[in-house]
Amino acid sequence: MRIPVPVVVVIALLALLGFWGLRTKDMDFLTAKGTTEPLPEFMTHPPDDDPTPPPLPAQGSTANNPPSTPSPAKPDLEFGDLESAPGLAEYSEHASRGAGYLIRLATDLELQGQWERSLLAWERVIDACHPSPAERKAAGDAIARIRPTLTHWNIDPVGDIPIMMQLGTSRKSSPNLKDAAKEVAEFLRRDSDHTLLVEPRITTSQVRNAPANAPIAIYFSGAGKNVPTLRSLAPEGDETETYVRLLLANAYQLVRQEVGNAGGILPPQTTMDRGDPKLDFQRQITRLHWKVFADNLNRSISGAPN
Image 1 (spheres, rainbow, N blue to C red):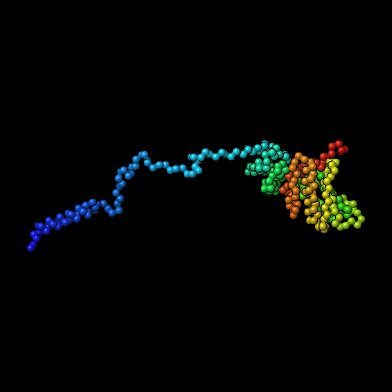
Image 2 (image 1 turned 180 degrees about the horizontal axis):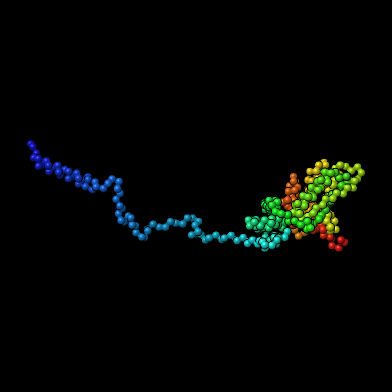
């Protein structure tokens, strides 16, 4: 039996319409591939009231903890009159504030280019305070660094303070001892920044048959009538360097003792470098130490004739 053609056409159309309605009705065949349609308005414009709660503050935040108490402010630095010439005892009035204050003062003065005043403040760390070992080393390093860059404190020979470095031997002094005495005297003058005029003097008693290693007495004297403090050194050999090392080591102890006897200033520390006595002078004896030392030698005992 044959199906009429109109029936077949109707059935085919119904099948196509059914397939289109079920599978391709909502498909967009007109928009180019890869084009994104705009989002709906309710997604691009959220409401003003954001329902999301604010994040909680982190633990330890200052929002829940009161601010910590600020550390006390450091005292202001007092530089003095920078336009006037300072004295050797400059900044001694700040000794009660401690070595830390004077180190800050010295550092700030150096940053300002006030080299002479900075050196004086560094020296006060040593001769006016009781610094810690680290503070003492910092001051010694600064003094050794700055002093060679400055002119001598005393540039007028009329202002020299004369003292004598006396050596006494029981035998004829050798040329090497004389050379060593001159070298040590010149070193002490330089270390005092030319404030002292140190003259060596050797006295020989010429005891008969005195041994070659007979001890040598050393002491300092000035115009005063004070009883000198003596030290005795026993050189092993007759080399100039041996004499220089022994003379410097004993001279340091004599200066230290004399400054301590004078009072009013802290004496230098005990020797710190037994290998090179020059370092003790350069790092532990300030120019104010030298002035006190020389003034004490030239001061007469009360009631003694001049």
